[in-house]
Length: 520
Image (cartoon, rainbow, N blue to C red; front, side, top):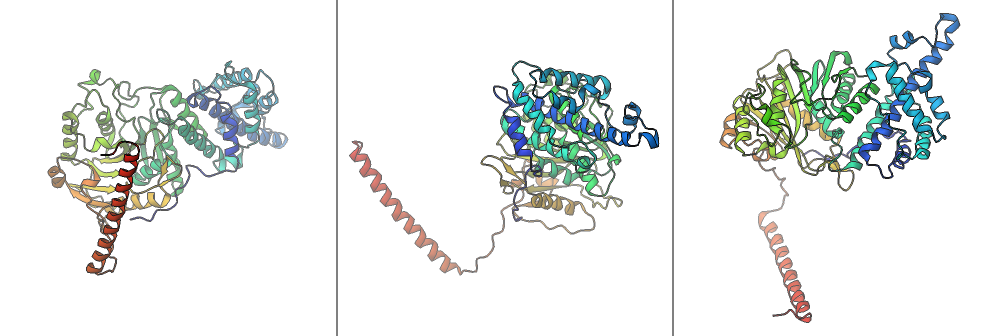
């Protein structure tokens, strides 16, 4: 298949991030990564908005006499889309107090002042720098280190420098937290694949379990890389974890992405903040196999159009929640545990059967294991759509009654002993197969062992199992150009040699056991 390219890291190396990470890691001490990530990311955010403020402040100061501008006029900053930073929160003042034992209290006061002056940030920033358990000497050292990096000036913003640093730290924190942590972060290669498949260029993008907002960041990148305008897409999200919700707010603010995440964190099942939303694109990575999701309290929920999901597993509740919010021409792409494709529990099988019979399943992709920091189990991608009809405007061929299966389990490369990533070339190949299949102007060639287009009738014959390996068949092996008789002699000779070696080992083992007193 695809020639495996070298897996690329989750963010471009910037030359200073490893040093900055090492400094931040010293803060950990007895703190869990889940705690100190908020300390570090809060500082990075503060440096960004302070730099952006200072850059505009300096420009207004230069033009004070010629244009009669006032660098202390809040309206100048509001008009430029820059947060107003009160004097006590400006970075130079904070850096000047970095070596003082009171630096924690100084930072808490700065965060409170910023939230007070900028209502959109209220309840978002970390304000626990003064806690006794936080090493103030190392905190001060980190302030100084971050102070050496320009993050919010015009040049840095044009290069999205802070966004890249922030993304790097999110990935490193997820790796440190390991299993049971990192739910806030979906590996970038997985996000890039989802976005590359859906290609959200215009319309409403929705993620009801948005974590730190990675799906939105990558969607905006996709629009910009394809000469689109970021205002052509409207972003809606929701997150139940309060600290992760704050991470998402900061992450999107840093990227200057205007997103509606609601006024607070909330559970999408029990407090849907976007009840009337019908999205053109849904991208999501919901928690796998949630057993405690309050399903019994939602037994008659109108979202369960294809059957009530089991109370002890939320996988099929998430699937139907996505469908509920999908527009008539929309497409949803999301991550699921592999078990979702073949589970035979009564309720889940009934729902999966109903989804297939309703011709909603457009594409299924099996991914390799070790992509996630939180689990080593392999996962899959589901793609659902309400409309497989031919579309002349979008140049889509009629795909009714068909589902595309892609088996990508052999793709990806290990970047560490336990973590794997898909390369850019592999992502492009998978997405290319999908778009070739959908494209009315192109020809689609199946590849045994890797991808195949399958009819609803065939899925029905396989008891509605949606595992790609069930349908793509075996990969065609290349001919070696060696006559059968000659190859058979070679294999037989090799087999006899291995049998002789096995017999010698058996004798040696028996001899050793006898010497130890355990012989026959």
